[in-house]
Length: 336
Ligand code: ADP
Ligand code: MG
Image 1 (tube, rainbow, N blue to C red):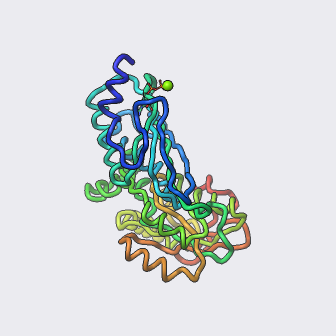
Image 2 (tube, protein in one colour):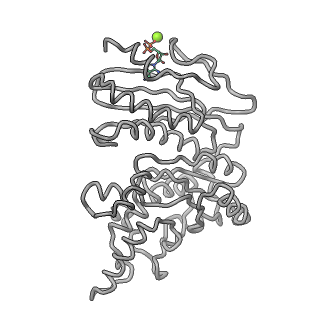
Image 3 (cartoon, rainbow, N blue to C red):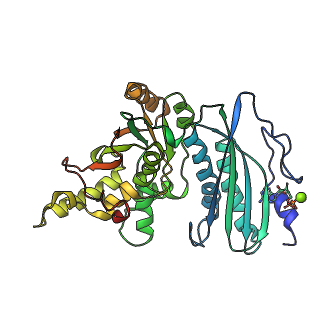
């Protein structure tokens, strides 16, 4: 790529805030604060797999950093530095300007320095590595959920999947509903302030990128425990509630009424298995319940208690009428 250096200078070089040496040398230099360890994570977004080829460049820039920031939040780490490796099919100045504007909007919002990367020609692929700081031994891991812990989730589940379903023509949302749900899908808000506060509160945490059940499943597996969830407690937006209510009404009027299967699977699927919400799912001792409710108020972020960690491995979900939903034996795949 002939103008690689100009391109890097123009689009990917910005003043840094906590970096000894940033973009421009063979390697960047950073100093880690005393008493802290580094949390490091990477996420790759490939055109055609993770986003549509004609995706809005600003939102793609935002999301490619935001999904990485979300991993820091899930660890209770404070995001600080990122590198960006990007393959571009062509040098498109307008696209690059918008992409970098979105990327740096997210970087500024979460105080992340872009300190290096790589730029090459190839099928559009964006790979971001992020580094954050967490006090030694205080990172919140997936593997530390305890029997009896309450299970919590931030924000709403399923809006990103609802927006995607609308874009794919599977259902129709009103303009208002789509505008709101598409924010969850394209410009997710990583829950960093929550993650930092949870260092003192949570036993385990994960960010929801593959769907509530799948991601909670990772906590259960790594912690060697099970869980009981109440579907009625899983937080969702009014837009999803609207679709869900329609589905339940529709099924109630049907003649066959096997209660466990009486909801529209596709809407339930969005709520429980829809990906890309980037909310945090965490577990905490029951004694922390009030503290978590206070934190919710302080952060102006809904935090919902959706169930408990159990000694029996496996996941049991109680439906709206208390019945046990039947996707347990067949795993979550059955559900998608
Ligand atoms: P090298 O040849 O030593 O690998 P490069 O020529 O690839 O270095 O990159 C020059 C500088 O620009 C390096 O500091 C690198 O980290 C940085 N850089 C390259 N691409 C990007 C990018 N997309 N975003 C941020 N920094 C980048
Ligand atoms: Mg070099």
